[in-house]
Image (tube, rainbow, N blue to C red; front, side, top):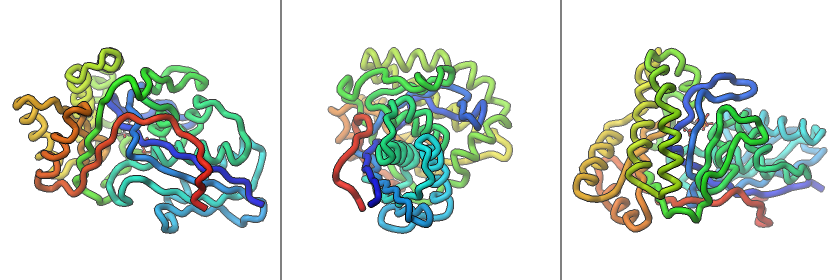
Length: 327
Ligand code: DP6
């Protein structure tokens, strides 16, 4: 009889982003990051271990996973197996709540859900901190998805305190309106981007500005101050892309529609609509606003040329286990 468990975990959007590594193993980021866990963009994952499975298998959104995803999942399962002292192979079935090729990063919610489900299936009693430290090794941003609400991943803290909740999801009705521009795979993975960050002559300037940006972000969240948060989040996203653009070789994540949205957000703000943008390592734009304005923002975004899909996400809770198994 296989032993199995199913977990649901939210993706997250970083206001201050992780970009660049001080060390890859163990994974130490160059800087601390702060994010909001998302409610409407989540991954559900069932993991079943059995001694008679010949190998690990992974089904993603109802199709067999590609080689790269399989390798990452297996490598991550090895970390959990090592803790449990087992060599049993696993059958993993995973589904995202967001469209398959939406261009939304699924690795944060994916590796958070995989960690929680695999640990539970093997009977490990791990704290969210311990699971964040594990998840971080495969996907840095996944560490933040082990907690709900507003979360800081501290670059300097010991493993047992690597992530902390700055405020619960009920603290503030902040909304992330995600404008999907392209469903194509990005030209350079986050992994490749982290590795190239050191080649940018601007990296020192980014790092020097980060402590103040982190402090402003913590303050803005505590005060529920969208303008204060939006200003620092926009600056941080542009700083990350400045690093990418000036890496060698350069990485250009934006598409023409990306820029159309950035200009539109500034125009809407001048017109009195409180909206601020942030952009991960890809062409899609996340627009930060509050619940009262979310529908107005979503409507305007849908009307822009080059936007193929729009997702509206509020602040979500920590991962949870469920009895509704996918397999
Ligand atoms: C730009 O190393 O977490 O989203 O595992 O591919 O998702 P993946 O990447 P990861 O880097 C995330 C980079 C980022 C910023 C952030 O979320 O902090």
